[in-house]
Image (cartoon, rainbow, N blue to C red):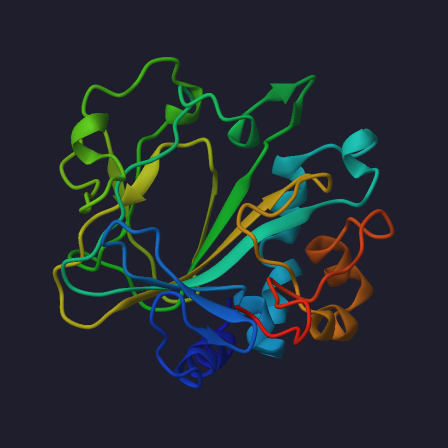
Length: 262
């Protein structure tokens, strides 16, 4: 991604008053996974045009179509793809997210499959770095080939995502991925992953997008706002809300009378 695009995304994040978990700014929600993992802005595609471009950005969308697969099958019945979570993440000193997923986890959403020479991956992640991520910055930690593992990694319990926090630091067989601002890391969610603990000053910024087949649904209770859907291109709308006309388009997790986010 170009430097100008990264600058626009960071400026868009700076324009949002720093939220606490549970707080809303329009249809953007302050969120945490509850494990000393930092702060997330869920539904960041609601924050303006710079973020809407991420939905089908040419730097990765063709790769996502390839890895999720399904062309010519029922998986394309409602469209090519569905993006079920998109958030901006902020992580400061002492914060990290523990390891999670892995081929042994048995989650249908995260299945990894290649059949007849075609990928059929249940969920594919794009992690877009908005700051340089080097040693001490809390980089993403991956365990190579763990999307195919049948048994739990022997160090998993010590490093897994849990209350009170954990990280992937020093987990045997893992690798920490470094990146420059604008780099995008693409990986199957079935891969066992987490992060190292940030020790440097400042904050790591990244945006995470999770894609799957069009028949999927939202991993959290969020829904795209009517305003977002109205301004999106047809191509982007098809990824954000491929379910129409099979479901009513809601505005948000909302109060029925005021349509105000809770």
